[in-house]
Length: 411
Image 1 (cartoon, rainbow, N blue to C red):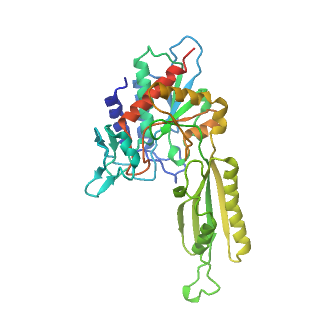
Image 2 (cartoon, helix red, strand yellow):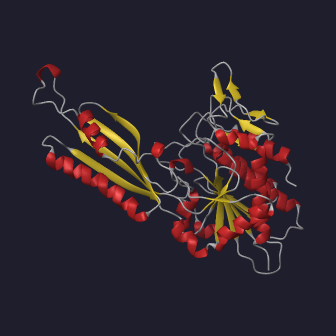
Image 3 (cartoon, rainbow, N blue to C red):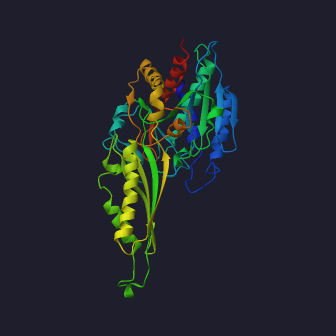
């Protein structure tokens, strides 16, 4: 049995280390403070008895649990990221432990009246009677993805301590900067040397995913002309209004808050500007490759049409692909998904196969030659003050890793 108290202590140690990444930085890792957790994880892997433990100059960590069988077995891997989202405060995390959760609201911060509502976050009731780890309402929790890191290290420790469980060679990888879309950029797939791997970076217990969005970013710039408002007639060009016209042309219902499952969207994530220059930042998402390409083309067509039809328009657009749907790379060897599904069933977890409405390191790694389905890590409400994780889900995720290791060593 996995030692839940040991797992909890390990998780609490990791989340109290601020390892927030920074999208405005061009360095890798994007923040120096990510080295604090990276150096600790390297020591942890060494202390539990793994071999070939390495950390490169960009903070990518790899390690090996050698095979304990005498016949050929595929080398598999488990991957998580140790950076934390830049979307919310990630320093001075003060976790709260709620044992035997009663199924009702949880007061995170009485002074600021911050409440984790079971009527709003209805999945909370699924964890009645369990131990929940929450924030204090002022930070995120960092379960994304320190829950995954904790589970991988705990599973490797368990396998080291229980040599009667037969397994092949297992590779472990921890990455920086996943939260800003760069987690796989400098991941050396050849050095990792696994035939396939699993990212431990999903949400609710049972999640098993091998489909994700195709993703791109778009930056649209609108140039205007500033003139004193008292003398502006037929002279001023207000770039803010031009940007508004662009926004109004895009489909109103194809936004994150109105889509689900396989439905794609345009998401306006940031707007900044003045009369002279306004900038819109979008992310574009769709599971279907053709629809994804059509979304990018639509934005380009709108810009082109506005530049042609509006005399004063001066608009530019920059599109960048970010990652693609891993299904194309995983489906030809879908047995790796079947193994994870069987592992869950054998420890009484009902698998939930669903598309990821987002992306993981696994999406990019799959296109770099390391097929990488995604397995639940247990957390909910990532990137904000209402983030939480049930301890029991983390224990089960750890057991899934152990069971996959066991199943892949079958003759």
